[in-house]
Image (cartoon, rainbow, N blue to C red; front, side, top):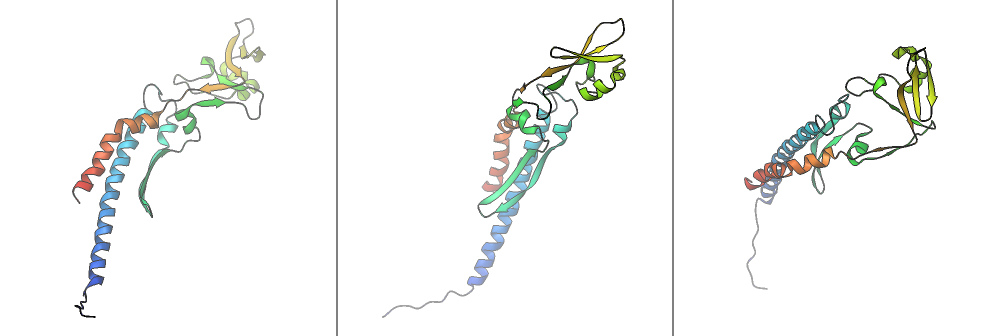
Length: 193
C-alpha cells in the first residue's frame, strides 16, 4: 500500500494538558456552585426567620446547611437542606397523629412562652399542675384544664386525634427566588472558560 506514515509525538503531554484543564474547570465550577449554594442557603434561612413561618426556637433555621460540591461520574452535585426531623413536614405539610398515646396534646396560650414554645409537656403539667400555679389538672372533653380552688377553669392543652400542618414551602420559595441569581453565578464561570 502506498501512503504516508506519520507518528504523533507527545500524546502523553496532550493528555496531561487536557486532564489539567478538566481539573481547572471542575475547580472553577465547584467554587461557583458553592457560591450559588450559599445564596440559596441564605434565602432559606431568611425564609425561616420571618413571616409566614416566624421564629419560635430557631432550631429549623439553625439546621439549614449547605454541603460542599462533590464531583460525581455524571457531573457535580451540591446540596442545600434542612436537617431538623420535622423539616419535611414544615416544607410540604401533612398530618400528625399520636404514635403512643390516644391524643396529641397541643399547648394553648397558658402553657406557652411569648414566642409560642411550650414551657412543659402535658405529662409534666398533669404530674405538677403547680408549675402554672394551679391546684390540680382535669380533663374536660378535648381540653386539659388547670384548676385553682374557687377560681375559673383555664385551658392549658387541647387534646386532638390529628393535627394538620399546612405547607410553608420555605425551601421551594427560596429556590424560586434565587434561581436566576444562582444560574448567573454558574453561567459567568462557563462563559469565561
